[in-house]
Image (cartoon, rainbow, N blue to C red):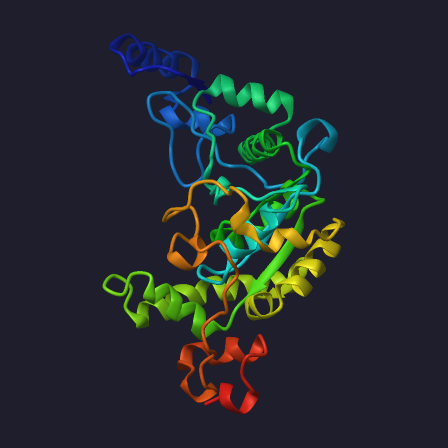
Length: 315
């Protein structure tokens, strides 16, 4: 079969009819998106339009050349659900002379696309897929923040990172992880209290449980340090000394007085913005709920994290 690319003009049709009649060859039209797909240009689950290919993200993989593809060395990611105390952890760590813990950067939401076939071909020739270039972008953005701070270690703590922690581990093979736990019922209650009208308690439970479940899954797959919010607020010096040891940093007692330092803008969407964090001092957490009052949906997680005895966590 002979294939030609065209628009189905009258001349092409007449040529095809004559060729089939006299030479026994049938001419067929190539669909618009077929050529793009054949060259790896069509997006997975979609088709090209207007002759412009929209490639798939490609396989997520480690950097082909870590020395050339990565500027950051051993970045740190705090993994937690929302309302688990990650902003407190951030501002105290950011008070260390060698640690820069910026606002929630949402870096995982930064994406790229190859919008032309030539771009796709060029990246193929250079050995990059879309995921590779996104990783370079993520690395560049966080490295820029670190350079601007003049410090040596960067810490990123956006709660939704729990859903892409495995990708971070591939992006930065030397990444380090801190797993921050808090009583599941306290997490749900705090998320509800932040906006009671829009966040009824039943929604708060289901919403925060998604993060907790993802965090627990990641804890089984990746190495890291587990920290409890309740321990941080009860004995901050001991817990942050332990975190510094994990990061290979000297303990600095002044870091717990985070109000003496500047930590960037505090507002909704970039971290905790309420009065407790604005106070500049570590305050005690809320009273832990009685085991019998833990919502049914959160009992298994409460038991798993050691906040409830097995008898209270099972129906």
